[in-house]
Length: 269
Length: 110
Image (cartoon, rainbow over the protein chains, first blue to last red):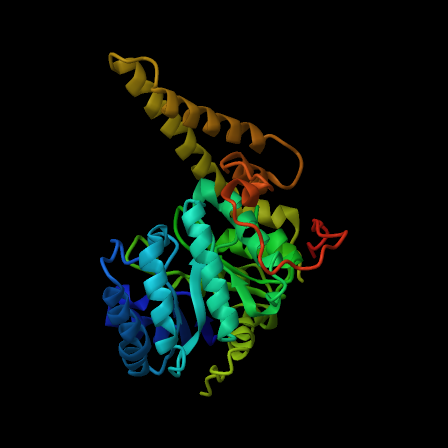
């Protein structure tokens, strides 16, 4: 089955992973800007990173027939440094017109601090000013519920935000209902230990249906599996679900959401 | 949405679930053996809290309500304060008009 991984950090992965993804049916991916595993020292470090995301990775993906798209921001962890964040946010518009850029992301919270919230709100201003889609990172583990509620507060308190143009990622059992109820798109991240397994993702699809629900691997430099979306496809088939429901979650939903950017066109075989 | 028989699900997942429970039991045994073998019988305060969280999660497994996963997630979650914006001094600049039915329901499940 053709699938789209809507959240994967290919700058951290080998070329061999692109080849494996292509063989397993991956036709497109989107790559949000994230924490590199260390705090960068200057805005120029982010300029180089955005160049890698918007120019280098699309070429690498194209070798294997995979469409590559990206999202730009300063991630929630480095957003603790407000002055650096403001320098990076001021630079982002230079890259927004590049062909594969879908919007602003992955913005959000990490430890749910005032500085993180301040920078999140300034990212929202940037997205609205430039009419961009928004991709949101919700925090990990014990911080997820509190942080997700805070993020939803900031989004819902802003009359300029259209929930249909926002994807809230890393939802789990205790956050998914609120995200979907408020009209946002929701992403389940299939990530060992700290997030969601294919089995639990299949449970959530069974409980909430396929509407506005996506699944991703968030494959990165940590312990992660770039082929986690095919694992979900396998699990759903094993449970006897219709191909149309599976395809909706792993292909049609991401395609529909990305198309709202005006820069995504469904891959044709 | 296709639904499967409870019997089928149990048959498919019995051995895997049994194995996961054994892992939990063995982990708790390992912790306790180390406590008794070492000079320090008591865990440090933060470790003791985390051990008690694990025991509380196990108690949730014994509940009958079919939302054990969500309840365990909540057990391991920090408290959310709806007034956090006041605390941080980050009040909305582009407030949406107030509505009377903002609270979402759990009725979305299909």
